[in-house]
Amino acid sequence: MTRTDRASHATHPSRRSMLGGTLALGCSLAASPLLTPITMAATPGEARLVVIVLRGAMDGLDLLRPVGAPELRRLRPRLGRADDADMLDDFHALHARLRGLRPMWQEGALGFVQAVSTPYRHRRSHFDGQDLLEAGTGEDVAPELRRSGWLNRALGRMSGVTAHTAFAVGRDEMRILEGPAPASRWTPGLRLDLSPQSQLLLERLYAGDPLFAGAADTALRLADGRAGLGYGAMLRMATRSAEEAAGSADDTAIAAYVARRLTEETRIAAFSLPGWDTHRDQHQTINRALGRLETTLLTLRSGLGPAWRHTAVLAMTEFGRTVRENGSGGTDHGTASALVFAGGALRGGRVHGDWPGLAESALFDDRDLMPTRDVRAHAAWLLNARFGLSRAELESTIFPGLEMGPESTILT
Image (cartoon, rainbow, N blue to C red; front, side, top):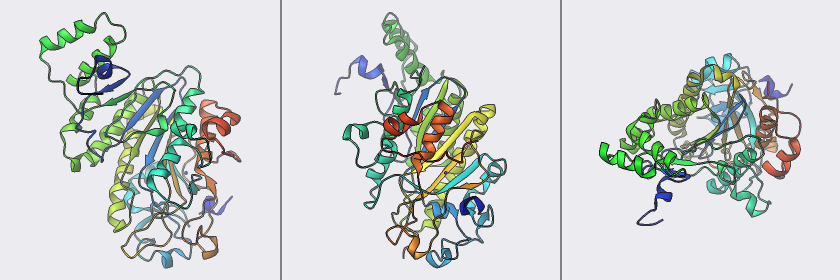
């Protein structure tokens, strides 16, 4: 048992561009940088995977505070306290803003892996870091491999995969699911205020066209809310202000929609939660991001119902923060962070990994938490165990250059 175990086109668009493989239904949300893209794909079997990209470099040492490390209070006199956190064991305390996840922890459906990172080092650019996280590669691979996402490459290796639904909510794109494997995109937000006569005309126009009939019907259903529970909530987001769009109501709507689709044909989903760049006043800014994470996980848990036991949720970030807090009450770009995981298909209720310590000699570049394992290894072992992908294809194709090492302890 390790110490961590002790103590995770154009002005006139054609009908093809309007209603083809990418179904765009608006621009209100696409203009907002505060909202998250969602992508989904259907695969056979009961296993479900949700990947959440925590954009902005999440401070794993604040989310999960190693209060048992004697150096923490010296390095973080304001951010390293134990009295305003929720002790999980005799070494780790969970940030108080995540206290609502305590029951999930107690039932073994929430856990963490401390001191993980991608192969990205030294430069600490959000754009480069996020690209590598979603591409699933190191910096020394062929450029063409970095143009696709590791989750898309994984889908390409699964038998029986069909594109089900893909969503882009906001203007960010999810590279993690970009690539040749079948996927589609949807941008909600524009209500198609058509009269009944116009709708009938559109339906008849495409009725004999096998390529566009389904897409036209989907567009009309999404526009008038006939698509069922969840679509209406997503469409209503387009009329909200940017501030409201960043709030918990939208996070609930996104997570609830994802959960509902996962109880149907969808098996894999990926979306992002921004807001983790905490250079100043971290005690305030991280609270908002943590609140979004808590809301998301609780909504997924509730919405998935019995399917929760087949679900694995991985919340990953591009890199961590410095171990020392700065003069503005925040932290700067670092290296290692934490993996947050949830779901009944994983072994929660504990902190996994090898804790490197916070002694000066143990720090990376004399400033950051030292990575002790590649975060891709945990994702790879999950794909191996739950979706049957071989170690050889995981290390060569899906995560090029990865050495998976021993089996991940987050697996049940």
